[in-house]
Image (tube, rainbow, N blue to C red):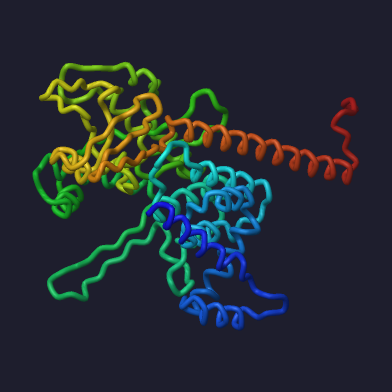
Amino acid sequence: MAVKSRLKRRLDYEIWMDNQPRANETITAYSTRMAASTAVSRYTIKDSYVTSLGAYTDKLPRLKALQEMLFHIEVGSLRTIGAAVMAVKDPEILARIDEGITDFLTPTAPRQALPTTSKISDKINELVNLYDPKIRLPRDFDDGGKPAPVPGIFETDDSIPGLTEYRITLPDDQASILNSVLQTKSISDKTSLTEAFYDTLTDNTTVTVTKWVYKAADLTDAPMWLPGAGWLSPAAQARWEEMVTVVKDATEGRQEETQAHDPTMGLVAWVTGVHDCCSGPSSTTKTPATQFEHRIPHEEGGATALDNASRVSQHWHNLKTDGQVKYLHDPVTGMTVWLLPGNIFQVSVPDGPLTPGGARLAMTVSEHRQQAEERARARGEARRAVHNEKIGYDPAAPVPF
């Protein structure tokens, strides 16, 4: 099955790569010709395949080389990647993004579970936000090509008799605070999230939540990572740096162990920083919606320590509890080997900030930001020199009095 699936991906890829628009062929003629042979809508080809696959081919040579060696990525995911980088023009930024997405999509273990299309979309958008935050991404537009609601929209709809609907748009990092507040209030009061939302706004109560953000202490201009929101843009990072009240060394949590069922805060912080989402193969459940998992149940003697810890969604926890799946966990790399029905195994590789991949990305972003600052400083000095020459001012000359 795996061999046939790879062949299918390769054939689909080669159909589009080997049949690019001919010289002087209009987009309409090309899309009509390809639609007749592939049964893909002419409008989809014209609006998506041509532009996004063209951007992938022209702007991401490292990813293209990897794909043409492994043929492990669906054409649909490549279109998503190409669409995200279409507006990026700076060659250095494109090289950084190419390096980041290629690293993310390079398998590091046998039978590794490949990221889903939604995870690939999240990653490429995250990289563009890190390196070129002024770019409007495809997700910033609706299906008609019009700008989608930006963070800051607040709307009400009372068209349904007896009901009012609210719509609010927030950046992921700010929404994570609101989600945590509502979940904490809901659990505390044993109410629904809707009731918790109303009570939080109308009750004279205070809800306190603790949020962890991760940042390498040994890097200058290091990026910051927030569970659920991922790597933050410079603007979002500035917001969170102002809110930080306590700074701790996350590595200390690796060694923490307790006889109790509930883990220590340090251990939870470390495990959360390793697993950017549920450790189930190809799971897309983000960290805030997962739970701390004892591989060997605590009531059966399983330790509350890193060797026995992971993060999984309720779905994968139930499958394990029911005996349908089993897994082995490597506490050093965070890799999880899942044994599935039919004696099939699959490996999930985490991508949090405390993994090797996360560390590489943090270093690359740090280098990029430092180089950008140096170039900005050089441009400022050059403009100042031109201005000084224009007005006849020599800053090195002795003071004339």
